Length: 267
Image (cartoon, rainbow, N blue to C red; front, side, top):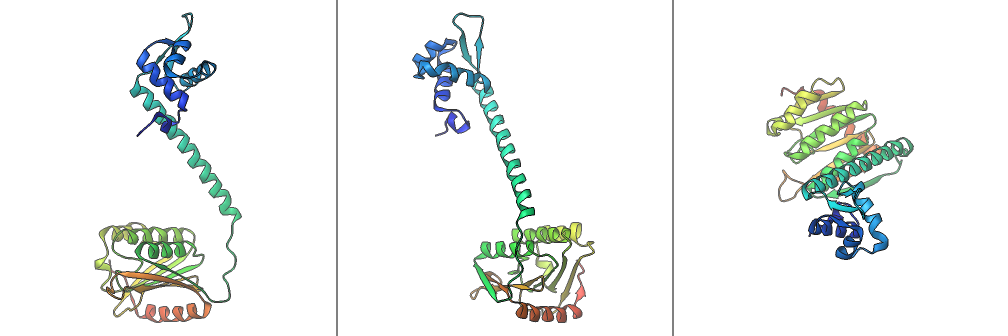
């Protein structure tokens, strides 16, 4: 069940506030008796409630009396305070990430072959987005079916956003699609392309008949190769990320061969 402690109050503060709501104006002694807050702690608790603007005091009375702020106002104030704390925490994390991004650098790509794989639609999409985000110089993509990184649905929009971020870093992006694929993409992907990417000087899209296979070439050093499902070729089963300069070179030659024969996208 929801509790005032979920909004940042201590156990004693929550008990004291509830007791004030029930009792009306009360002295510290009366509140200690009704709430069970020890007399040695009750003044600290009441001062804290006043700082949170959950209680008011009548200083002119002897002894001083306290009254609870109405619940609606009290809860709004607690919520406002938690939101402010969360915003401050988020800003702190953002500063940490900004500092670390200038300190942490990836090493040079290994000369030896290295590969990893992701299985499942969500994991496949995450791996593709991760590798695009790691590109420094160029990204070349072949998309032959909706099972590709430009899959129908949210992943297509996410890929477009990641490609846009890559372009802003100065990465050259070339996308070669099977000619029948563009009409099958969701309208939102088409809007992203037309509004944000189509006129970018480092972004080029071409289409060709008979494009087969789906892969992404990153910095001419690694290849994200999609593996379609054996039971449904138009859905993604897994993705292999292979870091191998020789294999990447072969993939680059294949891409360039098809690219030279392709035509600019007419969206």
